Image (tube, rainbow, N blue to C red; front, side, top):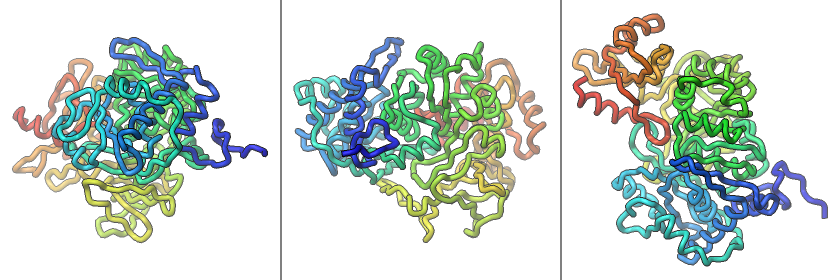
Length: 507
């Protein structure tokens, strides 16, 4: 019988769709002793997990979970850092048909308990304090308990839902959104992923974000489905990322614009440090035109990809660097679906006019369940919005302006924080900047900038600089200098927390 031809080079079966278990088994059969995961510890010590080891370890985990009655309809919460056991655990969970719930390993106990109350995990895996009232194991305990379990893969089963995303974004409030779709992928899904991300099969890939966050999670596991070697550092600072890209001759990396800004501001950084990169994909925040153009001098345009998406799965756009140069500032188009810009009255706005971004997958909409927040309103055509603001050009390319929640109304004028931040970051001594609105009896809110610099610069200098690009009403009325702008593990600032801290300091 002639084998069915698939895009998936590891698929020897007749069906296009594969589960994580079958794909991992196929890759382990083709290259059992090749490295699947290379872990670099905080002490810079390297450990390697081969494809055979990953497959067999995840099989043992799956058998142990099944013995505990964990399977379809159950969930396992993983409050772990980026470590090889975390990868094996995810595959093990999916092999049982259960739902994988990744959570920050630094989540406060109260936050962890709130998530547990929401998803009712059958088991919590964490190396920190275990939440009261829920069965819990450390990774060492898990390894010991599954050591004698079979290494053969258990009967294949679909994991639906496959994932529960727990994201606080920039608001600080945790949202739990389940993906009611089977774990795995198909040729069609891979083809779309390759188009929007630039990935291909069997690349050397670096994980530059936490596994509990949507974008790094997708990049990591889609990369493993493609047979990529995943280099996974414990530390995600700019110096470590650049050093490991050079050492392992990394070909694929996904990162947030904040990390890109820090890399380009590193003393002694040269574009030759990233010579091995075949694809850099950025997502997870606003990338200013200045930063983008800077990186287009570092990475060739046809190798620089950008994606715009959100935890709520309402849509996704993407754009490649050479396409971006024809539509500078754009975050791209939807490959599968439509974008509409609507005014406050709900009517669609013409090209070039800023309004609320609505997106629709059409018949391709992912199935999601909102566990602890109301579902987003949806119209008859499937359009939904998370409150982001932007516009489209005459060719239908989307341009992101800001999140509605980050818009500052000051003296009756609307000011997008992102616009002011981009101007401040143009200054050669500014490493990073965040703009927030602080309550003010006269202005309603006054614009306050929190700035991290790499050299001496004063408030008056920055204000004079900003006046070259912005009208007076958009200029910060106060500037706070800090050694380091705090971000969560997603690389994002929590603006509500910064407002509280700035007010407490007397600003």
